[in-house]
Amino acid sequence: MTIPSDRHPVRLRRSVLCVPADNARALAKVAVLECDAVIYDLEDAVFPEGKAKARAMLVAHLAEKRRPNLEVVVRINSLSSGFGEQDLAALVSVPVDALLLPKVESPQDIQAVADFLSDNDAPETLRLWAMIETPRGVLNAAAIAETGRTRGGRLDCFVPGTNDLRKETGVPDAPGRPYLVPWLMQILLAARGSGLDVIDAVFNDFRDGQGYEAECAQGRAMGFDGKMLIHPAQIGPANDHFGVEASALAEARLVIDAFALAENADKAVINLEGRMVERLHLDQALRLSAKATAIRHKGTRA
Ligand code: COA
Ligand code: MG
Image 1 (cartoon, helix red, strand yellow):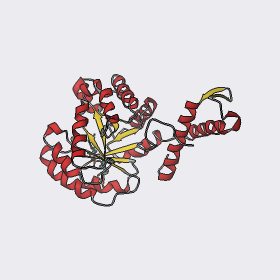
Image 2 (tube, rainbow, N blue to C red):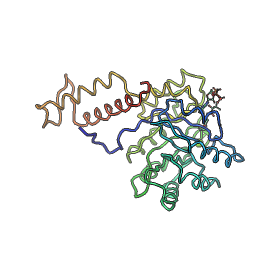
Image 3 (spheres, rainbow, N blue to C red):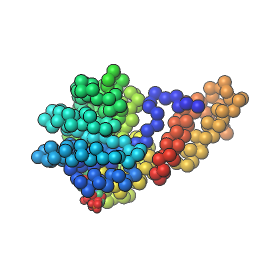
Image 4 (cartoon, protein in one colour):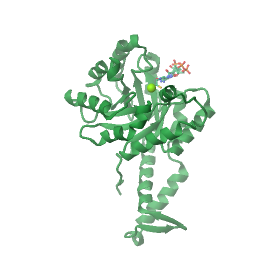
C-alpha cells in the first residue's frame, strides 16, 4: 500500500541540532551524534566580525564525508543583513540539503532566495526552510507557506523562533509557554495548510532536563514533527518524544490489517472493536507505520 498524502514521504526530523559554524569542536562532534538533522548556523550564533571565518570553516567542513542519514541544513544570514548574499554564493555549489532563512516576514523573502538559487543553477534538491520569529512573520505565515507551492518555491519546513518572538513582543519566558502557544499553533496550521513540516523551537536551559522533557511532550502534543536543539544532551529525549510509541504502532497495525480484510475492501468506514474507523485513519496509520520503519532503518533509539 502506498501512503496517500499531500505531504512528502516520511522524512525523520525528530531532532534538529544547531551547531555554530565557527565552533570547531562542535563541528567535529556532529559525526557521532544521533540527531536526524543538523543546522549549521552562520546567523545569530556567529559574531558579525567572525562571519567570513565561520563561512570558510563551514565550507571546509561540508567538503568532508558526512554521516549517512543526516539531513544537512545551513542557517544563512538574511539578505538585508549584508552577509546573506555572500553566504548564498559560498553555499550554492556545496552539498547541503536545505538553507534555513532567518526572520522571514513575507513571501518575497523566500522568493528572493529561491530566485537567486535558480539563477545560479542550484539543483532542485536544494530546499528552503523558514524561521518564523517576528510578529510580521507570524501574521503572514499562511502567505509565506504558500510560496512552497509556487513554481521553484523550494519551501519545505517552518521553524518558529521563540527567543526572537519573545524579544519582539515582550512575552516573557515561562514554563508551558502559555502566551506563545497561540502563535505557535498559528505557525503550525499555516505550515500544514501548505503541506510543510514544522519543527518546534529551542529550549535554552539545556541543564534543565525535566523542563526540557515537558516542553518536548508539549511540542509533540501540539503536532510538531521534531524540535530544534542547541545541545547534544537534548537529542535522545527529542528522538523519544517525536518518535513512534509501541502502543501507537500496534494500534496502527490493527487499522491497516482491518482494512486489508477482503470483507472491508469496499468499505469507507468500519467498526473496529467498538470504534468508528475511517479511511482517513488508514492514511494516518500508514504514515505512522512508515515513520516507524524509517526509525528502524536508521538504527537510532525510539
Ligand atoms: N553541537 C555540537 N556539539 C556541541 C554543541 C552543539 N550545539 N553544544 C555543545 N557541544 C559539545 C561541546 O563542544 C562539548 O564537547 P567537547 O567536550 O568535546 O568540547 C560537549 O558538547 C559538552 O558541551 P558543554 O560543555 O555542556 O556546553 P558548552 O559550554 O561547550 O556549549 C553552548 C554550550 C550553549 C554555548 C553550545 O551548546 C552552543 O553553542 N549551542 C548552539 C547555540 C546555537 O547554535 N544558537 C543559535 C541557534 S538557537
Ligand atoms: Mg532567531
